[in-house]
Amino acid sequence: MGARRRGAARGGSFGHGAGGRGMTFEARPSRLAALGYVVTRGFRGMAQSAHVQVLAVGTMAVCMLLLGAVTLAWQNAREVTRDLGIDVPMTVYLADGADDAEVRRLSADLQALGVVDRVVRVRPQDALDRLVHGLGGEAELLEGIDADTLPETLEVHLADGVSAQVAPRLAERLRTRDVVEDVEVAGPWAGHLEAMVATLRHLAVGAGVLVALACTTIVWSTIRLGVFARRAEVQILRLVGGTHAFVRGPFVVEGMVQATFAAALALGLLHGAFDMLRPYLEDGLSLVFVAGSLRFFTAEEIAFGLGAGALVGYLGARAAVARYVEV
Image (cartoon, rainbow, N blue to C red; front, side):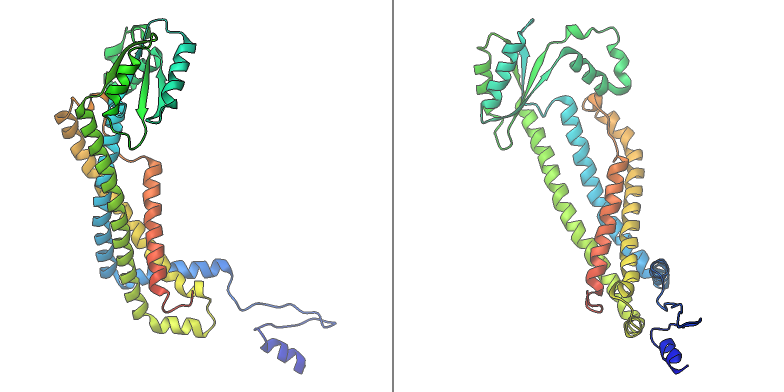
């Protein structure tokens, strides 16, 4: 009887039955119950400091909104340059009935040069398909046009870091080939547009780094306030044997929810502003957008943005509780 009592005292287990056989009931909660507590406590902690949470989410949303605007501008500028062919500094028009072997040899010679990144052969049907796709709702203007009326071309893309000034000299050499009918080189304005797109890309990357740091700092500060306000609860959980993940879990949930809500709010505001301004932009810049229309982020890109927000919240929350919970 004494041994059975001692067994009950160890680990909160109780034995019963004949022949010394018994069943053990663990006092520790299941993983599902622990996860439920972590999530519930995280949301309850946010409700206890609603004003602070609203301020943090709003501040992060403004930062993410600026990042989204720059990224959206860069994305659409890149698409416009691609649709208009501005990203192709040189187009080689092939002679009628050009021999395939000669065309392949010309492509190989171009790619052998250190200044050329790739050569894309565009057949007449491919060119017509591009026009139809680029005109979008105005594609009916191309009805009745035969693809054979369009020339076959080679699009020559220069390697990264190669100046566009190389294209005119290279064009003079290509015009001497029998298989070449003519060579068209993009003007200086195309180089300026390419520089603008590159600048927008650099701005988007720089803004992304700054916004990530700013949002991480905001989450860190907010969670630190929550940890300080609930430090007695944290100490009690540690004293009763709560694991590190169990103790810091509610705060990590808070941080991830904060940043995800901020990202969703920023995307929603940006989408509303985009839908409101798009007609005016397309009407005012109809000459530019005749070959393509402005578009918002795809579903995959939106999911990536929400995931990035959750990751920022996770990192900020982990950093905030590291001082109070051994990681």
